[in-house]
Length: 147
Image (cartoon, rainbow, N blue to C red; front, top):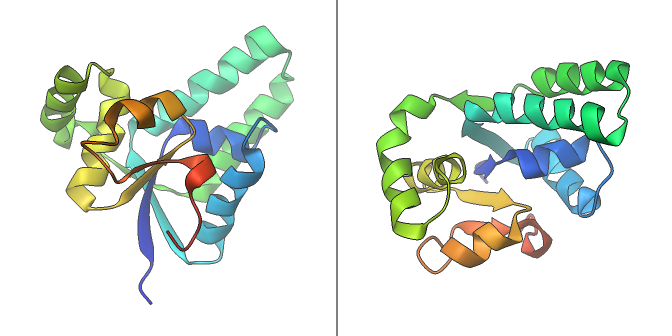
């Protein structure tokens, strides 16, 4: 069986490091990646988004700065394949305009369309807004390794 390419966004990745609702489900994605069953890809925007979430958690939720640095290091060590947003931008803007979603979210959808991959997100509102047009966009709570 070949490895499945899965697009992941920051709503999934942050849950690997910080316990939040759906963290357990998110860790199933990480386990699939670490076991070699899944290949994880994302627009290179992911790195900036993770950095920003961690910064917000330090600023608003009292995450220790040392923990923040550890999360960033651990994220980098995962070595998720990050693809240039520039190559996705035209499709992302078109998707964003058509579905009234921001371009950041649309970049992940554009990548999953281009790579014919599942896009797993913990953003249920995003899934509900686009999944009639983009059935490959799946809410984390509904995802299993078999799907």
